[in-house]
Length: 394
Ligand code: NZQ
Ligand code: ZN
Image (tube, rainbow, N blue to C red; front, side, top):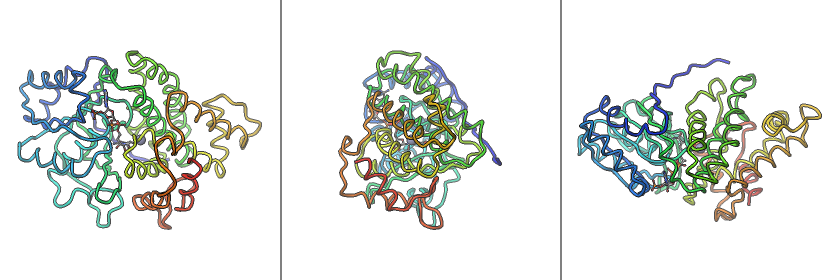
């Protein structure tokens, strides 16, 4: 193992911490661009509480509402323009992953010369942003981990390509993670978030380099915690203890710590992004469809790893380390778990047929590919492999 780790985001975690928003934002700027989604924060009173906290701290705001799920490039440009014209010097993201991602790219686009899409992976002559306004995140949904990482994902609606950027300047200065804000998340979105956070760690568990036993244990801890508390959060949204454990797991799952030293690619994510780009489905729902199908494909070449997953997550006894039957049983049980919390696991359930399978595969590889044009992962995948995986999920 050889790595460097850095995560500069201040994390303030716990029920009731929203009240500290103003005090924290004030240390990073004097006027805030307040970025929100399609209206949930207005309906459930979170927006009112957030603005009251900012007002009490003497921080005026310009409101940028209406960030859509699977946020679009045009929305990011609108927000960046508002930040400039309103002379904001700090950005507050109050919402789900879509709102936080859009806010991060707005913050960078303020200083970026040219088309902000040029920041995104897959562009020729790509330029990673080096400067951004300070961002403070307040997640209202436990899922992406965007609140405490330097990544953001947006869709270019003109080309229907969804891509990502990770940059040092995109790390939020602070994340205020208040599980009380997630009690209004409906059961389906709660379940999709649980699938998303689990997939963040299964990606590195299955695709990372060999010889990272401690990271394996971290990943298993995140998965087991999400599987233990997730069903309670889905069954009773007001169960604050379940909401708390799920949200902490979602932060840990993608703030970089679990993946440290694994040098892992994210093939399941890359494939899913092509689906949500074309069909606007929830990211976590798309992952629930792609993940078990991908696992069955990958288990053919890396049976030992999937057997270990079966043993450690589902306590299945192994006859030998390469026990293919146990490996397959582990994947079946994982899929059954996803179904038990209400996730779809077939493309047809999210309204996707077989018409564009080649297109999804092509778009996936466009954003992320190795020297031979394959999607990085274990094993690397050709476009034909991606089509095969998706076809198996029809
Ligand atoms: O838009 P509003 O009205 O707020 O409603 C949202 C939206 O409809 C709703 N919601 C959020 N908080 C709520 C709530 N409803 C009731 N009560 C609340 N407290 O939930 C719906 C989905 O929101 P969204 O932000 O789209 O969900 P999520 O957090 O799953 O974010 C998904 C996006 O993040 C990207 C995905 O690709 C997708 O675009 N990702 C970002 C990552 C990152 N930056 O690290 C990593 C992820 O793997 C992922 O790719
Ligand atoms: Zn994800």
